[in-house]
Length: 74
Image: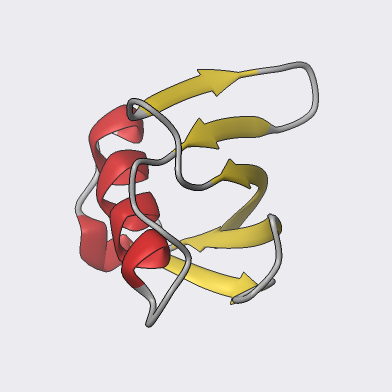
């Protein structure tokens, strides 16, 4: 299992994923309510990392802008 740190910016104008030195920054169009932004985050990360969404889990930071993401390697 691999862990990465992601900084999330919800309510953005567009969906954007970019890699910085020590983390991945993700701008989301969804609002952080009822898990909508977290679902969109997983979808965008799966596309960016070219893996299945079912391999990605938010291991900590469910309600935080800084999240630890666990990736199951298959």
